[in-house]
Image (cartoon, rainbow, N blue to C red; front, side, top):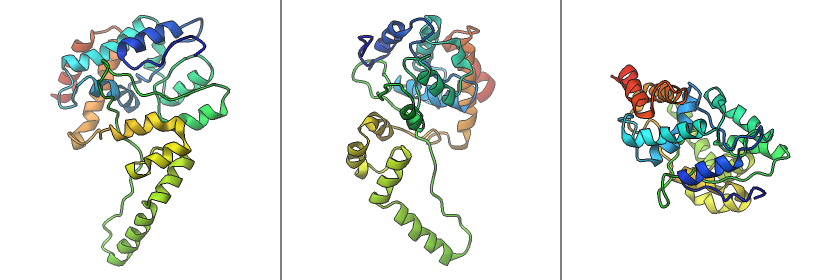
Length: 251
């Protein structure tokens, strides 16, 4: 607000806002482009929202998403250190006023609350107005192992059903600042934590990383973060970087 910059909703608006907010030792935006699954995770909202698909990473749509990240670094709106920062370090950049915007998740909200930073959450910008932001789903899973002991498995199911009760889901998520996966509790959750509404929308529009590829996803994630590193360091242009990564890791 102080900078007179509206919350960006499209990629063009994001680039313009990041450039305006870059001043002194403060970059306009920070994100994780690390050579790890964190880097791939952070890239997926841009990759999927552009219409790209994990079954073929070397497409013009995928390249357009990678070009956005390249432009942010080349134009000086994002530090070259995004190549090394973890998501935790992004939070530190934000709370120390080294970055005006960060791409991150609900796990940092308690960190932000403890800081002196006036913060808010917005949806990930999309290529053009009217597009839908698509983010990856992640977190913990409830499981009941096949132990062969039917009685114990039945008791475990009773416990799991209690944990998945609407009231319990609401309490767990509001106290842990995580996002509920039951749409039935969304309204009550947003009433309790209105600052998280954009993240609720992201989860409802999200998709699983393994839905299409299953066990093959880790190799694709590796290919993506290698392409990101190659493009952001200037070794190759985005489409060429994606084609090289596809050839090296997925052929």
